[in-house]
Image (cartoon, rainbow, N blue to C red; front, side, top):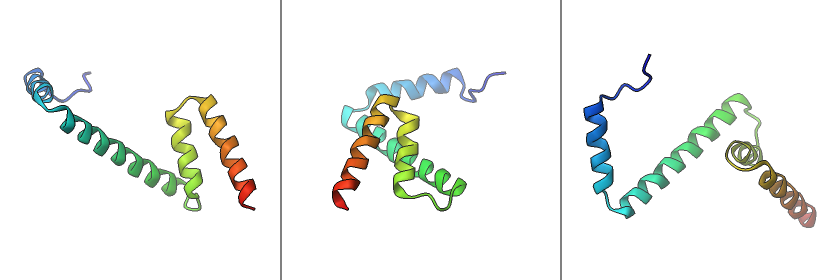
Length: 86
């Protein structure tokens, strides 16, 4: 079973349109897709855990999208920052 519901012809047209698109437009679309992904992710986290904090949402996003070592460093820096504010 093919999960792609786009015909080969339509896929070819989409690829041609994308190839002809100015780089600035591609970057804008990429930014729009990124923001949409973040919004949908946050909605999902908050639906699963209504008491989730903004930090919980960010940590969950980072755990899905970055290297575990970078996440560990983020947590350490974040904890240091919280300690200095107290």
